[in-house]
Length: 282
Image (cartoon, rainbow, N blue to C red; front, side):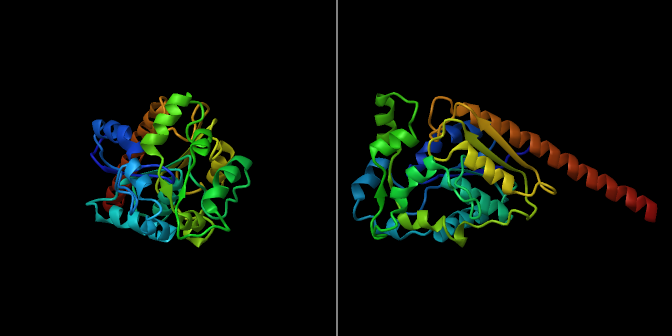
């Protein structure tokens, strides 16, 4: 990497921000100033957050609008615009923040799609209908069951590994945040020019299938902006902590470096064009 820069990792629903720990170490070793700030009301271990229920009313009342604002404030507090990388619902937030011009590049890892990309895929609907809980109270959080976690986040792992992952990372979730994904709070302008944006997907993702991520990618107008897509056939939704996490992490690092080189080349080109114009007119 040519210049040290901040990268902000944004966590999705159901899991702790500690899922980014290995990514922070990797990106830090590659010259980035990497951080993974937790959601509001989630700055504790997974076990501690599970023990708070049913008294986690602050989390229960959190909205998607408030969550996006939380990360917007973090990004704006940095000395320069960062790279923004989000997973799952965090991938939706990353797209929103990039759409607002708040980053130098964005990566959405197996993201929840913005408003306008209707998620009709069965695996997504089956995995999220309990969280949405249309007829359930928003005064209580939703705790993903081990059965649902093992099917959506930890598929492909042994039972022992699934139980370990559940104990380490599974946490209660806000229904109001999830329902915000069905509103204008989840909207982006797909035609607006933006900094380089990468969307990744997993061929074995049983929560947000690759087909949905590809439809998300296709909605962007790529006439004036770099928008890339890559599917990893062996990746599941739990890619952040699974044994093959480096497959996507290394690809993302290479993609960021490639686009930084491109950006510098464009900047040099504009400077040279400006110097030539100055010579012509003086």
